[in-house]
Each structure stands twice: as structure tokens, then as C-alpha cells.
Amino acid sequence: MWSGVGLVIANMVGAGVFLSTGFMAQNMRPGFILLAWVVGAVLAMCGTVAYAEVARLVPRGGGEYRYLSTLLHPALGYLAGWASLLVGFSAPIAIDALAAGAFAHAVSASLEPRIVGATLVIVLTAVHAFGLHLSARVQNALVAVKVGLLTVFVLVCVVKGSLAWPTWVPPTASETPWGDLVGSLFYIAFAFSGWNAAIYASDEFKNPARDVPRAMLLGCLAVGLLYLVVNFAFVANLSPADGTVVFHYNDFTAGKGDFEQVTLGQAVMAHLLGSDAARVMSAVMLLLFISAMSAMMLVGPRVYAAMASDRFLPAALLPKEGQPPTLAVVLQGVLAVVLLMFQDLREVLNDIGAILVLFAALTVLGLFAARVRAKTKADQPSMLSLAAASVYVVSAGFMLVRGLQSKSLIAWVAGFSVLGLVGWALTRRRQTPAAS
Image (cartoon, rainbow, N blue to C red; front, side, top):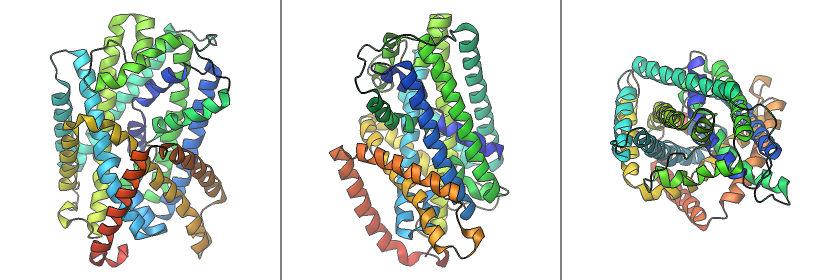
């Protein structure tokens, strides 16, 4: 279970928490910023509670592919599986590899970002492709380092920073602060994404029906508390002008310029301990990205292996007894390296990430279908999980409506759905009875 908690933490904690408040501080007061993070934590916990019940009802690996196939329809599961392969894991790994390379370059100018990123993908692919024990040990070690570094960061902020309530005023204070708070949830939700990481490796838990839900709930709760503490440190120690460093983040990770500070973590360390501390924080960010990449590279191939077990993908992607799904791990690594070479795809990849929100919402809606079909009390989702599912679906609907304002995203969703359904129709005859 604790390895599952580590997977959740590793997947959740990335750049988002070190960036979002910098943008929000330009038109939101400190109190509204912190309230937005509280609301974001509550919504993430609602999603986690709902998914925990899904994991209890369907204690098998494969994530949304398996859940949607079981609870709603195999065609939806098929679409979710392909979404995981293309944009759920491979694309985020490539984006994190680019960011890791950029922070490595900030630590040492002699390091070329894309070469560093590709090297990290290749090394982590090798780690997770050849042996479950090595894979688990490396991932647990990276999580331990990640938690340790974040703990030190928080302690520095507590010991050296201000604990007084901030009094600064944003440069362009909004006349509709509640509207800005709701709008900020779109970005905060992505900072909280990853709370469902444990579901993809359910088959490797000793007691998945019990421990997968616990891993998600504990991991999400821990990260939610961490985010609140970290963001209080940001608003208490940095001004809106200090927060503008985040405006350079995309150019920095895209290799379009060298900047000393591009995250609030670097800014607050520089403010409290000096410019050298900002460089140290660059190394910390590098390690955070490596940990996130490793977690995604561990769990993603379990989806492809589940699809292979149902004959939607080649049988070669299946794991051998006591071994990881080696070829599935390699396939994901190859896709990530290919995407890494196409840096201009970053914005497109970020846009179509909303597709994953759609499948998460559909998965949660599956609880209501399970409630209708349940023949025994044990098969019925709890009322708490249904209430949490309702809240999460409403929040996911808001994110989708906001995301679908982009014409390119509408085209991506429509095109992906059509091609995916055609692929499912062509391959459904190869399904095993269990997948039908």
C-alpha cells in the first residue's frame, strides 16, 4: 500500500504547484488564492473517493480502460486505453523530460536539455523494463528523495520565512474575485491530477480491493495538505511582482531563453537564502520531474498490458510471470522520445489533456450504472461515493466546457473519438470473452 501512496504522490507533485499561484497573484488577493487551493483539494478528494469505490468494485489493473469496459461499455474502455497510450502517459513523460532537461541546464550550462531529457527517458525505461524488484526499489527511492526534499523546502520556509498573514494587494485587483476563484480551479485541477495513479497497477497489490483505495486516499490527502502549506509560504513571502517569474516558465522549458528563476520555489529560496539557493532549487525541481517521470513510466504500461490481455494490442506486450510488461514499457519509452523531439507539439499536447478529464468523468459516472445493476448490497456503490462522484462530475464538466472553447481541442476530441471507434469496431472480434 505504501508503494501505492508513493506512486500517487510522485504523479501528483510536479510543476503546477510551483507556478499557479504566481499567475493568480496578479489579480487575486492572498485569501482567495488559498481558498482556491482548498476548493481544489476538496474536488480532488471527491474524485479520489469516487475512484476508490470504483477500485473496490473492479479490483483489476488497467485503469480507465478496465473500469469503463466493465462499468459502461468496452468501446469507451478502448478509447480510454488509447488515450492513455498517446496522451495519458507518453506525452506527459515527454513534457516532463523537457522540463527536467531545462532544469539540468540551469544547474550546469554544459548540459543540453533535450539530450538530458532523452537520456532520462532511456534510463528509466531500462529500469522499469527489466525486473519488478529493481523497478519498485528505484521508484520507492525516488519517492523518498522527493518527500525528503519537499519536507526540507517546507522547513526552510517555516524557519526562515514569514508566518504572518500577507497584506499585499494584487496589481490588477478584480471586481469579481469569486469568478476569478472559479476560473483558477481549471489550472489547480491539473496541479492535483495524478491522484488515481495507483489504479493502473492494481494487479500488483496483494489486496487491491482494500489497498488501492487506501493508497489513493492517503496520497491525495497528503498532497492536498502539502499544497496548502507550500502556497501559504508563497503568498506570505513573495509579492505579486516576485510571482511574475512564472511568466518565463514555458520559454525556459522550451529552450527559448535562460532565466535564473522561473518557479515560485526558486523565487522564495532566493528571497530567503540568496541566489545560490535558487540554483539548488533548480536541482530539486530536476529531481521532482525525474520522480514523476518514473512513476508514469511504471504505471502506464500496465494499461497497454491489460489491452493486450483482451487482444486489442499484440500479445507481446503482456508481462511474463513475475516480470514487468517489458515490451509495453519499451513502447512507451520510444513514444516519449519521439514526442520529445517535437517540441512545438507542447501546446497541442497540453490542450488534448482535457480528453483525460472526460474519461475520468465517465469512469465516475460508471458508479451510477453500477448502482442500477447491482444485485447484492456488496455490489452497490456507497451513498458517500455517489455524492462525491456527483461533485466531481460537475467540476469535470466545468473543465471540459472551458477546455472546449478551443476549436483545436474540439477537433482533437472529435477526430480521436471517430478513429478510436473505428479501431474498436475492427478489433472487437479478437476480444476474449472477459473483455466482451
